[in-house]
Figure 1: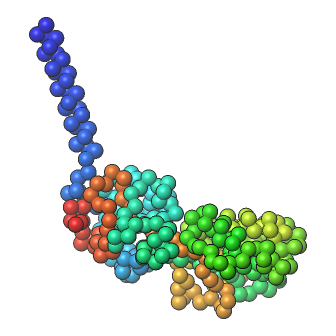
Figure 2: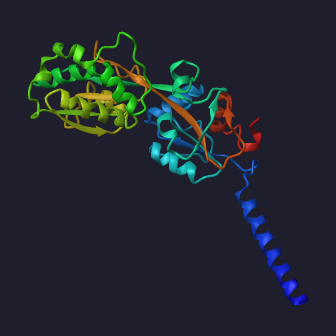
Figure 3: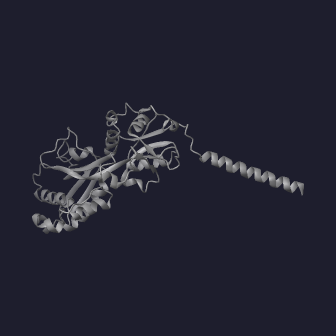
Length: 312
């Protein structure tokens, strides 16, 4: 009997030891170093993020970033990387937060929500913009379709499509429906099934652009929407810049940031679509932080704050 009791005590001790070990391994250690994740220098999300934390030197250069930073090539890669790194920090689009599995931090004490973006209290945001061609030589029907498409984006129908893909925008009492204005665009009543319209630019705006083009095609003679989204920089380059006349030309390009002084649009060829917000994210197992200040984020990316215990 004594042997049986001793054996049970050993087993219980081993079980307790195993449980203690597992708990210890899963406990967040605030003294560990922060792993910094960032996007590549052509990313509109990166532009909005570093501009929003007053770190403009890092918008287009990695020279000012902390030693050991990890660069990823897209929103999805950022989500995967921080999900796999309990001590990681990064930034993603607000539209991706709900399904990301990550913890989104309040910024300057304000929660990252659509309502707070629209009421102007959440500052870490960016605008989605468009640019169309200025030279439509031998593309008159394409021009008419694009002009109708731009008008459609500002209607109740277009706004609903944008909101369906998490674009942040609201209608007003004066916002027309497409039916209210479609007579201004006779191209919509023609058969356009032989016309291909080229969409491109920002990958962050792609889901919004695809939703809009798919819905509007059915309202505008079933033109063929073709999408080739390669980054915000190509929105200007392929509509009015160096590639506007080449094989990569676009009829309309999208940017997930404001257009730069080096991307001069011709008059009446660019505009605003909606807002998106950028969220500072950490691993869901991170119990160290719920809210963060712009200065703290900047110091993390500079390397001044190097481990989680340095945050207040």
